[in-house]
Length: 384
Image (cartoon, rainbow, N blue to C red; front, side):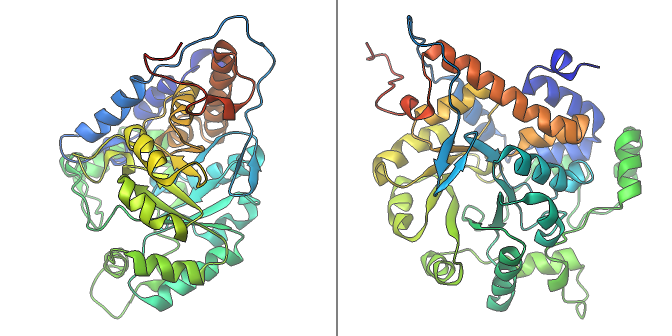
């Protein structure tokens, strides 16, 4: 099968991934919170941004490279952290790490992934970022930072948009419990997807590999539940200041939507990550691309802004860059690739995005990405 002919878009890959996954796994990956208006708003706001093609401009092959926090990347996007990626398909974290290392783009490993920093050290090369859910115990925090550093992860991402657990109503309807139990309904759903069930049976039920060593076995709680309790600290400015002292590498705060918050933290971090957590935390929040504009105005041109949210192709990456982002991260899309085709699917996601950007930049008359940024490339009705 020629994958590029039958699955030329990310939506094509998404549809195949959905067919291959049990309902509870798909709901875990795809769901938002509440009525999912934030999730819908994120995509609609992105679709509303138009970029005007130019005539009689150079058709030279564009340069897609960018420099972010002192590192050059051949492409302006990377892979965002997703908890329990190994539930979507066994070994997904390793697939993402290998593709990232080969392409020279960042992969951000979640604290609650099914692989640890040590697991990925052989695969990640020098593209490792580590996402931190703020531990309440300082000794656990310091140990996690040391493990990430020793495994070669050079950039720390503090997630700041989970002060309390969110409600995931679609997960409840799909029969998922916390901690997860193999109920008859879950078993039945798994049986409908034999490829996923066989792959999972071979690799074993995924666990929180980074957190396993911190589980207090003297309690009656499950390991996952007890470690989750330890991670319930809502980080504040003092916590960020502590991380700045304890972490020698680059430091990014993820989950910022308010321009005042961005301005307040800019002096303490190397980049700010504009994100609404895929619409999974707060249903009344703004779309990241809308927040991006106000945050760029608040912090000025110098601090890098990373953004995510509903990217379905290279056009969406250009839209985000045109509104002030320096770099774009993708969460769900590479997981669609892993579920659809394994390692080949993750590689294909990168191919689709790269090809789309090259085609679109030709239409826009651009040969380099910085030329798309505001105000050099206006996107509103006042452009001439």
